[in-house]
Image 1: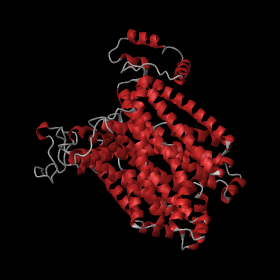
Image 2: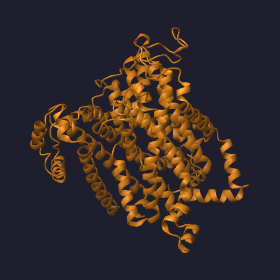
Image 3: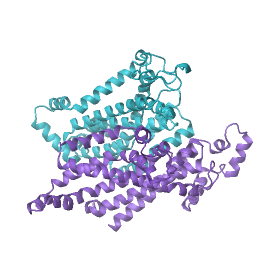
Image 4: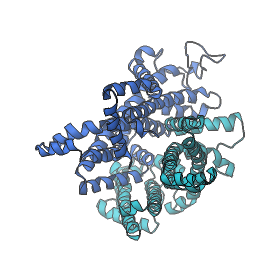
Length: 303
Length: 305
């Protein structure tokens, strides 16, 4: 974190040297392959989730024991009726994978919203006011980091009762630490800059300085953390569901699908590779987008 | 240094106390312990009897202090599911998780430090690109899925490694790789950026100007300074890995703390859950304390500033 101030100054200096900052930003975005690929794949998955009812060839919940464990179409015994085969209950796997994207994205967005608000408020307040407020927030962050997320989440969800919304709530209440850490240091760097001092000098109320001056200037950090944390929330939900204590059957959560298929993986390996690949592709796209945004907004901060 | 160490130790103690309170409340606020212990279909009288017998009818603060007092003496009560003292259960399962954690962090360091160093020496070379790819893939890979793929490849297709249980050292290979891979991206990135920073510093230029051999500059001067923060990070990452062991131990049926936690959570075995969560948190607190001390010892700016 120590080189952030230098990074910030350097990026300010650079934006004065080049054409216009906006033009530079656009140029960097076009030249960044990771960002473009990440954004593209993510857009496709979001479209897939939105259009799930039209894209899915079958009902993802319809069971038919007569057509259990049909392999995907690229196997000899596969058929185009079930392009990705069927699972142990005879449900169309392609339809389940398509509907599964809705659960992962819903979890990712909702957890991001809850933990983002908590973490951003804590981080900005700590960074802006400093002193005792900062001590308290830093203490809270330390305590939170000491608790193993996955174990605490498993315990709470198991005790209160597992459901999609419970998973979202628990993960949202747990995963605010990185927002707080990053926004705290970002706010500390801007709080004594001239325009903030000026706003204070003309008697601007504190909440307006925070909302109008601080927030816009730390927003690029917020976007980067939010993107990367969304990927991590999706992976956590998958792990909880895999352990049987997250999203409950018959919902087609990708983590749960892998868990259900575990017993069949030796004879029907596609049952675990397909949802795993879907998860991997989604989180990879989100992370590439996040890394890309970071590179583009602060190209010196790479590494 | 002593003053910094004392301050840091007091903070760690405070954090540990707060964490113990969270562990206690986590169970007691999430559910009614007596009802859950009585099981499904229990009558109100049974629940009341349990409440009296275990003292759940007393105020939470009293229960917490009593639990904490016993916990500091190593007494976490009896497991509801295994019917044995929690402390004995934990002691029995602890070594497996410690071996797994140590092997996993060892694997992560062995993979990421050499790659990170070479990547820093030759930025934008193929090694640098490979490092970046490993890091990006590692961050997006679901741990349990990676574990299943390893199991499938080495255990089922190639049939070279055991995939379930923890009887021999071979049983630990796949779980350690699956768990350790999770820690590689962070360590690799820090090694690379630390090394890049050190290589640009004045004393490296001086060392080169003195005419020292390249290898001597790299290993005696540069690496030693770049690796110090990496070791501290590795300690913190080890703490995270212990938390993540619940997933890996469940996949590979390794009888460690993580597996114990999963069994306890699935069977509403509160005393065990509380003990394991507290224990893993404490290990993390101690590891971060040690890492901070090491960093402060190596870098005077931290302990004075």
